[in-house]
Amino acid sequence: MIKQVSVFMENKVGRLFHIAKTLGNNKINIRALSLADTSDFGILRLIVDDPDQAIAVLKAESYTVSPTNVMAIEVEDHPGGLSDILGLFDKNGINIEYMYALPKRTGGKAVMIFRFDDDSIEKKLDAAGIKPLRAEDVKTI
Image 1 (cartoon, one colour):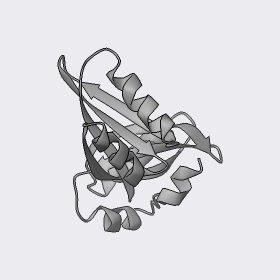
Image 2 (cartoon, helix red, strand yellow):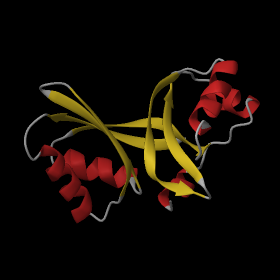
Image 3 (tube, helix red, strand yellow):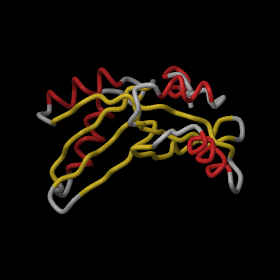
């Protein structure tokens, strides 16, 4: 499992800039992000190289922040690569809550971040022959 940092933020000009600047000023590197918003608020999901420090510095800036466990899984980087792994999920009864991509590849593969709504997900992924990346692996991508 990888610790994702979720930030609840007002949808105001400069808010995302302030979060990115705060993390940068504290030498925290953003590896991936997803931003889902409504007209007034948004949820920023971040994969960073030091999630505990990111949570601390963002809380110190009065943001509502929480950790969430997610998984990073390599996907073949060719047409149909994503559908191949989604087919394995379907075959093994694995439901995805949400997902987004890392901007870099590893060894010709893309890396996707998945949030599953299943406490037995690690057993199901193992049964499907899928090995998630470790947190240490994601830090160096």
